Image 1: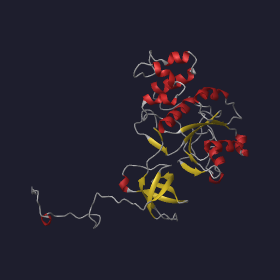
Image 2: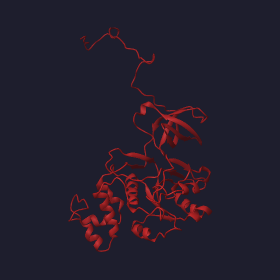
Image 3: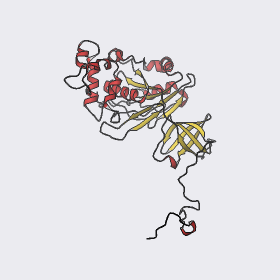
Length: 336
């Protein structure tokens, strides 16, 4: 084997050309200081639609970003053809730092987290009061994800013409979560959309809910110019709707000056990516009761102070049950 000393002659070293071209290989990446700033509106099979200076631009991710993926809501830097004309393609060269992240896993045994939305200010958790029945455990999981990711929760209850909201409001009353109650008739005449829009003014809000709750119908009422296909059908046996929204999409609110991000309906909301010790932060009505807990308490053991706290009437026993269900079980679906 030929060895070279400390002081080699450059002419004595054979240079291997790049097989794919004549340009030499380098690890130095361009800075793209002249890149334009944009916002990712939707992602579809490796192509990202971005908003750049008021126009939509189709782009792809630059190779130097590696495995780092951009999601809806990301602030990105783009180069290339930014005209937005047909058959043009720009390139995303940087992804900005995220102020918030909504993440989920397929189930509680899945080690791979999925970033659903970035940089949203608020998470609107949409649930029907009937047809299909409310699923409080799924709502709790969405609350955990919201608090963990830095989003403020908003509870939107639909189909109040089929069932009253009293029971659900009582269950979450101590959490001081803002809420809006809507009916199908109110959505049709625009009254309900106006009340929801008041909660979205000037903010970026991600909408999440399982299929059939009327999430996309609500989004269509908020942004009538960008109508998305709704489910319109709930299975009589399973009580669940069909998935019709297949990708997240950011839509501007013309009158309120904010953004709505419609996301695909979920049937489960895994929390495998969340540290169990942080789950208690999603239950502010229970958190003060942990002051008397032993060190490193799992909140699901005989010495946990939460039992006495709840027994004294400081919080609803159903909330403690929800917390312990999240901590003690890693279910693949939330069936309740």
